[in-house]
Image (tube, rainbow, N blue to C red):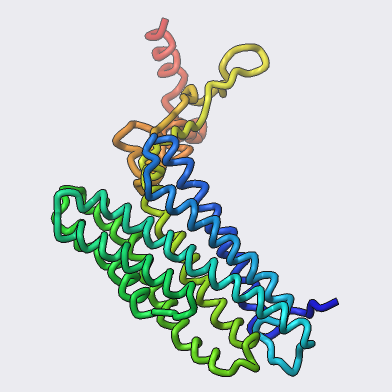
Length: 332
């Protein structure tokens, strides 16, 4: 048996691969659902689909590498384990490069829709697409041209804010789209951090140890980019409206409405309200405006006060029998 227990940096790599794999498929599945619902499936969705599949292969290979000593020193691993782990990680690196390329192209194609009619940005995006493809090709033949990747990442994260600056949109919509697209800047930071750990490759004898940190930041770069690139298409979900109903006319056992004697009876009424999911409206905030009860006891119970006084017979306040007789006579 050549597999070993996951340890050291391999633990972080294992959990990173599992979490990002699950989150990426959840977000992408929601993206597919929204696109089908709105009948807006486009070329950027095809690119993101390919990127998601390739990223899944990358994450799966990294999970397997964790059981072949990824993130551990050579002295802690059998020679056969190091050999198999090295081979698997090299394969994973190729899938990483290609998946990152498709994810970045998907974001760029989505921005091309916004940049229609703006020639400068259109050409800049096509240039970024070409540079990304070249970087992936160069990486796959053994030379990691990281500067192109970093430039492309930061350009794709900053350009949304520039493109949306003069677009006729509501301020809230413009801000939300810019923020969601700018989340890709975190992937850019992951690329830079990953660059730092590439120096670990300089020691071929500790290749499996270097795969722990390098694999972690490689998955973070592509996984976060994939999730951030799939968030803007989910915005139509925020425009959905839900209907909330509270209370109902519930008859009692005799078939009539429940009531309480001695109380100003008020029949319960059904209440429903349509709430947009893109607002932060709270039930009860507009109770006075819609004549509903914010308080469960408001205007339901009527209080009646009785005052009882004692009069001593023969006392100064005793009206005497004649007074009572006259009062009774007047009521007849």
